Amino acid sequence: MAKTRNPPRPSARDRPMICRGGPVCVTGLAVMQELSYSNCSRSHLLLDSAMLAILSALIPTFGLIVAGFALRHWRFLPDAFWPGAEKLTYFITFPALLFANTAKADLGSLPVTGIAIVILGTACAMAALTILAKPALQVSDAAFTSIFQGAIRPNTYIGLAVAAALLGERGLTVTALCVALIVPTVNVLSVLACSHWGDNNRKTGIISVLRDVIRNPLLMACVLGLVANASGLGLPPIAGPFLEILGRAALPIGLLAVGAGIDLQAARRAGGPVAASTLGKLALSPAIAIGLSLLLDMPPIDMAALAFYAGLPCSASAYVLARLMGGDAKMMASIITVHTLVAIATMPILAILLHAA
Image (cartoon, rainbow, N blue to C red):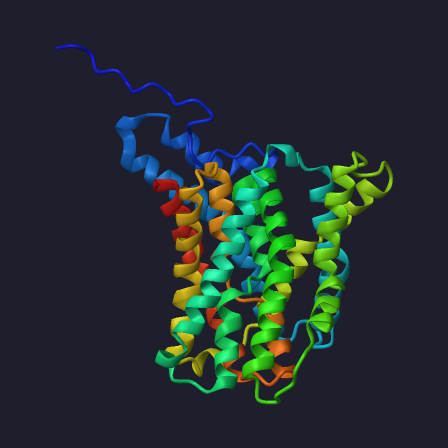
């Protein structure tokens, strides 16, 4: 009987989900990919190893969220600490991370047009589907604005942490581009929805909306980083290392703040509309992103980054807008909390499904 040979090892171009981003690639999808091609006769063991690699990358990320909740619940830090931590993250550390990453990224290797089509197409599709589903949801107009925001607003803090853990520098850069594209889009859509359906009947002009969007520090950081990249300046010699060190504080502080904002009482108020919102944001949205990525033949690691970004839980900033513009703030709190808690399970499942595909 002829000796059975292992199938040839695919080239780097043909393998899905290979992370080429640097030291971070020793975990997550990079490791599970190398494991999956090491010996086909041990498929069950390798599947277990792949799952372990995914969980090893994601558990620290969500562990920080749990730690933030515990610190807030046990009042280890005064309540006054958390608003300051959120402000520091939003205005200083996350912009530093986004600027440094986009300024030094190899953007020429990215399918920027395809990324834009996938992530903006997913957001617009979710917005349209949510509006079409409004009669079936049987909620008040104010509650609908909260459901609408839950369908399209991603938590950038979690998105960048997951990309860094699983996808390396390239995945982090794709996620940063998603931030630059999605931040203005979802802000405009959310404000328009709240203006139309919110209880206070506040009418916000498009000029005012655009002014607020332009002032967003995350968007400004991405745009300035892209300008520095395109101009060839990149990261300046002294300011560059400073921003990179500052940016390292963004993910731990941001994730701790996400955990501190979890409201279990709000989660207990969750009902059918909140469940529908959770299913849509954490399952339907990434499915749309994957479908569009396949249609456009996106590189596997880019498709993974887009799917993860599309499947992120709702951002806490949605609560502020709901409260200011006549939305249902209590339902918004429930949506944010339930999304975040359920995402602890759905993000690893999504990673395993993407690997299996």
